[in-house]
Image 1: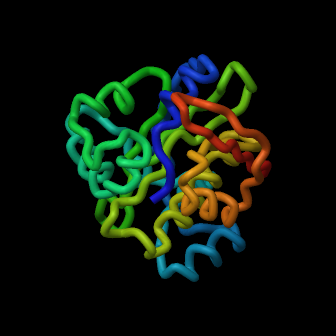
Image 2 (image 1 turned 90 degrees about the vertical axis):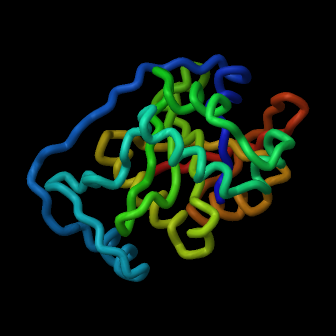
Amino acid sequence: MVRRGWRRRQSKLNSSVRNTHRRRYNRPQQEIRRPALRNRLQKQNRKIIFNSDLEVVSIFQPITEELLNIALSIINSNPQYNILENGNPTRILNDIKNEFLNQNTESYLILLDNQYVGIIDFLSNNPNDNCPWIGLLMIHGKFRSQGYGKLVYTLFEERLKQQGYTKVRIGVMEENKAAKRFWIAMGFRFYAKKHWENKVIECYEKCF
């Protein structure tokens, strides 16, 4: 599981506000054509369908009120992280409603192999640094250590590139050593420390 909850931290720590632009893609589907990405996915025995611009189709599904219980089940499948962040092993629906159903972030369920394997959300522009931020990448507890985290980030990074982004940032609690190892393995580099509610947040960045 990869760290969660940077949306609230950004609003309190950096006063982040942005407009969400959700997009739908209805162009014809075809197989992956970019060799490096295709080879990386084939190593994980995944078959992912893209449209002609290599945009992922039917993988990142916007979280709606009807899907909020699925998001909650994914969050509560990671009790150790919930304890690390909030001091409680489980969350309730009202805890996450404002986090995922708002106008300031794009929040998605991740649909792979015909099942919801995780959650990712995205802040397109932090006015404090004019950079995009990943606020959450969490894989369901039963799918951890199966390569889904790396696969999902690879797909999302490709999505960002196709939308014209050249870098992305994330924040990780200093105590979350597993998350730090993950992001470093994905090519992120540490650049700063910040503080939020008596917690030390380590900030990482990746340029494409």
